[in-house]
Image (cartoon, rainbow, N blue to C red; front, side, top):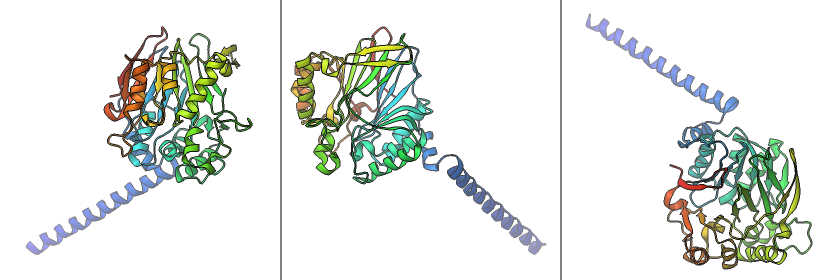
Length: 359
């Protein structure tokens, strides 16, 4: 009897082992099917890491300064539901997860515009994932002929090309307009100038061959206006580019950047105004070589946003850049992702606004 009981127990254990192995095999097979036919498993993990974010209310424009560590990622949610992503952090798992998870939390199906300000890996690192997961109606890209300048930029260019989305070189006057006139907004590039403009100091021909400094100074400069409130992002541009921007604006009283645009509901004059604008994103993660005195004194922002990693080796943000802003605008709020994580700027239809940590 005892021997029979032992045999029966061994049979049960063997059957349990077979069933367990079959269960594991089914899980592996299911994972392969999901990974091949639906969504990559690493992307699925990123979706599951989505933060809990409040919903955008009607008539609001929201700007999300996403905490990607020592990198850059900003997401715009416009009043008509359009979305724009500016840069996507570096290629680390933590940074890519933050970008994909954040976009998923916002309920993005596809971005209307993806803007890569310049090819540096701390801006381009997650762009390939964004293109693969979400795609875009348009991709605004740097003027960089060398697609193998770094692995992040190479991966982005490969995915962007495969996506079939129009790939447009970033240049002054390129813009995105609101779907209707009731909640009018526009997003427009103030730089770089077209690479076709002879002698342009905003962009070096094929910046990839000229080194990191040229990368930074070829950064796309984005201006957004809604409900009388204005936001300026300068990428990693140095004070050299900022000073030229300020000079062109002041010498022409803004006319250098004004243009006529055609929306579905009619034509409109776009007249960017940098004088006393409300919101400025510190250039180059708040480094001492950006957000210079000329730009600070022209903009005099009410809030300055800094994207930097906690305890980063570059000591970003630097004290001089913040001091220049505070000297020009003593009551300016300074919001840093290395201190509070992701940050949400909300601008309402009546022009009122709030800034708060995302979580």
